[in-house]
Image (cartoon, rainbow, N blue to C red):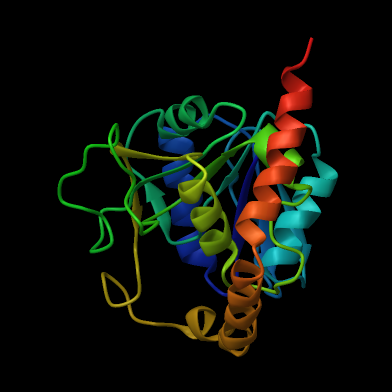
Length: 227
């Protein structure tokens, strides 16, 4: 199940949804955050939710509503799929217990990359998680943060435990601020959360968060694998 959150970008959001519908075929939820949008044209299998929750709560809301999905994908309203079947490629790579990211066609995307040998430390665009990996953690977004460092937490955890992967041949263009568009109010709105969330992320990491989460995830996955 995909989550596409959008705030104050009705036109751009529709363009992102249209690009998804052109190149993807899997279900998702459009979460319209604290904004008044008109009727939106959604891809087949998609639904819409209007709400006031910030990023972490949005993700954990979706996980609570859809706890048994085989995969969970996150895509932004400034992400535009360009590779046909991009979603199924990410889902296949994620399997049950990995996190996958892909080419964003931005400065954060390596010009060349051997995804079989290593994973870039930047996440250029949308992300995909195997369903069992999320269930093993017990949350999709760390419940101790509000908006920021969600991807950083998962990235650090998955890279340090060998659960990360990257598909350079799957392109989902990230129309980043100053790389094709001007910085807008949506970019600025979550700024008050950045410093507190970063502090919580650092505290989690320094307190052995990766090791503790790895023990929890490993135990869960081992039990799932048992006959």
